[in-house]
Image 1 (cartoon, helix red, strand yellow):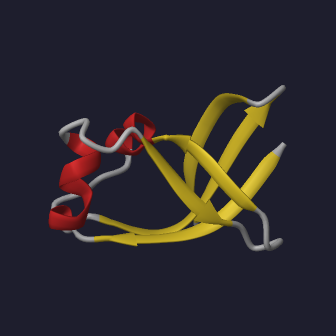
Image 2 (cartoon, rainbow, N blue to C red; image 1 turned 120 degrees about the horizontal axis):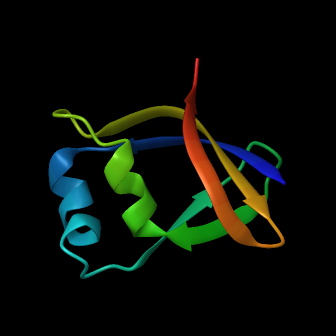
Length: 71
């Protein structure tokens, strides 16, 4: 299953996720669904300015497969 969503977090807003104080993130997809996934997967996409863009979360049988930025 593929879920598409926008995400805009500053570095400061991301810190609770990075530090492990918040374990999951909840996003609203372009199809209007609410999706929750482990916040540790965001570590691979953070930049010096935070996390900004349009992303695709791919799952299989409700298990994380990948998280990629969509151009």
